[in-house]
Each structure stands twice: as structure tokens, then as C-alpha cells.
Amino acid sequence: MSAGLNLVSESALQFFGKMNASISHEINNVLAIINENAGLLEDVALMEEKGVPLESEKIKKISGKVLGQVKRANRIIKNMNRLAHSVDESVKMVDIADALEFMIVLSSRLSAIKGVSFKTVSHPDRIEIFTNPFLLQNIIWFCLDYIMNLAERDTTISIAVEEHGGAVQIRFSGISGLVDIKNYAFPAEQETRLLETLNGELQINSNNREIILFLSAHP
Image (cartoon, rainbow, N blue to C red):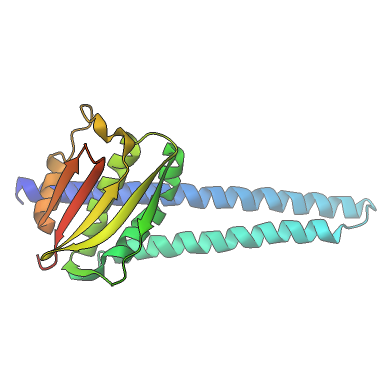
């Protein structure tokens, strides 16, 4: 395997590991909350055994919290399965806006820690390209991660998907920290190799505080 492909494989594994670590952390949080509420139900049962009347409203409140966390866990696992199945096909037609929204959801816990939020700008048309879905998610993640580590806290990044000639572009705008990128070499060799594999290009415009990811509609 060539050095370039080795780098792409390495970045893909790192991306997959990072996402699964974040997902497992979220699942652990859900289990912790369910466990806490199970303890509360046990306390209520013990009090009832001692003759203390049951408080139906309190029980309903606790059970409602448990059901809410079960629904949350279902959403998390659904996203985990979607990520896992994104490697099923090496190339397919991919809805760019949908892939972008999915990566924003997967990155939500990490972006919340950094104090950065992402807001997508809707496009009237469905924009698709024929590409590798997993590697596309990988390069989007690299962009989101770079922005999260660079932008100031309480920053909202605007993301728009646009058609640009025979290509598609994802425009990340309003990156406050982009005026000073001395300590953030991006794209590095790993990202560059991934872009070459996807037949893509990345442009950084510090004056406009934006990053533009170009992707060929037919790589």
C-alpha cells in the first residue's frame, strides 16, 4: 500500500475511533441517568414499605425521565449504526446537506464542550455527488474539528452547501479565530491525502473568516 493510502486509512481509523469514543461517552451518560432514576424508584419503594404513601406524580416524573433517556439512547444507537453502515459501499450518490447534518449531530457533544455551534443554511435544491460516503464524512469531520479548536467560545458557524460550476462547495463562514492560524497547520498531509482521494480541494480565506471545501460532482 502506498504512503498516501496509508495516511488515508490511518485518518479513517482515527475518525471512526473518535466518533465511537464520543458515542460511547453519550451512552454512558444515558445509563448513568437511568441508574440514578432507578435508585430513586428504589427509594420510593422502600418508603412505601415503611408506610409512607406513594406519590404517583413523583413516580410518573421519574418514569418519564427514564423513558426520555431510552429514546435518547435509541437516537444515539441509530446514529452509530448509520456511521458503521457508511462503509458498506465504496461509492454511491450522497446528499451533501444530509451528510453534513449527520456529522454536525455526531460532533454535537464535542462542539458543546468547545462552546461552538453550527448552523446550516438551507438550499432550495437537493445537491448530490457520487463519492465515498465514509471518506466524505471523514473530511467534513476534519473541517468541523479544526473549526472547533480554532473558533472562539460562543461562536456560531454558518455552513452552506452550494453548487459551483461542475463541483459542489461547502462554505464554513464566521470563523472568528481564523484571522490567526499560525498554530494550526491545515490542511496537513493527512487531510491533503484524503482530499486527493476524494478529488477535492480546501481553501482558507482568513480575511473573510471562512473555509471552503470543494468536491467534484463526478470524481
